[in-house]
Image 1 (spheres, one colour):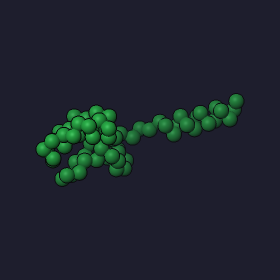
Image 2: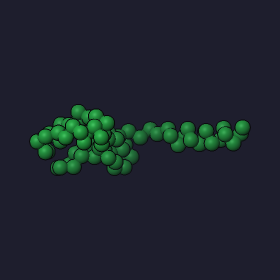
Image 3: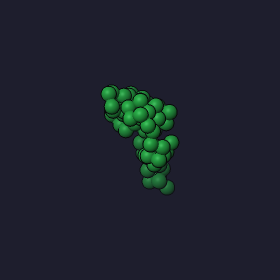
Image 4: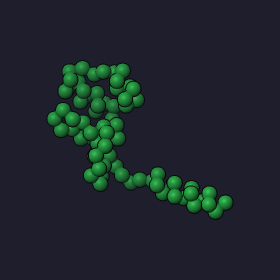
Length: 73
């Protein structure tokens, strides 16, 4: 029982993160940046609306099928 509690505690602490992600764009690149400076994919900090607007501005069209399969939008 004690082992289960320790494993659950470790898992709980590992899954808790105060990391906040913000949406960033630079030229033709969209990405996310964490509050600690870590870089990540756009879906971590960008909303579906931000991704759509970016695609429309950069490419002139939004690939709705790719947006749904890649980002769940």
